[in-house]
Image 1 (tube, rainbow, N blue to C red):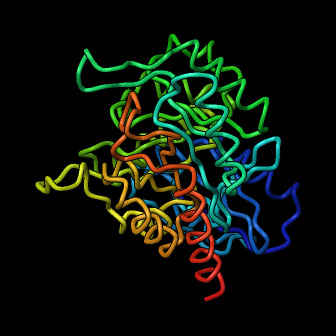
Image 2 (cartoon, rainbow, N blue to C red):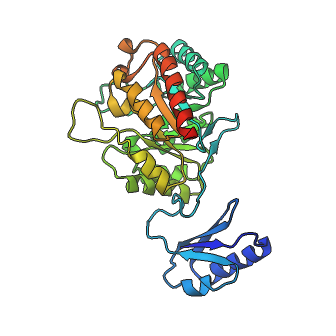
Length: 337
């Protein structure tokens, strides 16, 4: 249930009303204070609440019952966009286009530091790189793991770029102290025990949509994290599995405006995993910018043909430099319309 209060209510009145609701009913109340109004989001068993009685209070503007199972991620509870801001000032959400770039996997200190320096020069504000790699085959390169995290930290020290990297197990959490944005991959989108633990930490979580998951299932996974107390969630559309075989996955570009309508959380797009083909990354990235995605996460490798992981869907630093200019231009144009 959502209760919208009339403008300019005294905090004392709001606090007394919230206290009355929580003491009388089995609900939790989230308070969102906007520029025009204050919204109270009631989470729990609201069936017994008399909405007509609530609406009759002289300080209440309106009352709405929310049917969707996701509450904290729901834009109805939080009308304005959430903006994820890191200590260094890097932002995702609230306008603009954040660029997250780097190799699929960390392979050496020379490689990750070189790519980090190049993508920063081209305007990337975050460094992506895999230390732990979930692979379909157990015989494929599994990442440098702890050593990979150390090398990411070295690249961060040299460039100042915050680290975005994937976690695969709750047991790895102690290793992620220097990681700025923890990524949950598509295969772990419904690893609910992992999501619960990530709800207890105070780092932004980049949550990728599963290969065969609906938008509502993605939002429910976000809800697991947010219900634990961590509301810094970034949603990522990375392509879904369809009957098409030419591309690795099928980018659901419509998911971006749908998610931005349903939720206040930032939405980024991964055109690298969506296509699996480096020549498709640019048009898909431009499409994402055109539908107002909040960011792009792109695989950039100094030598894609010799990459240990996903070289076919990686672009070179020079190609990223061209792409970055184009997507920024599209994003700026869309914001002026």
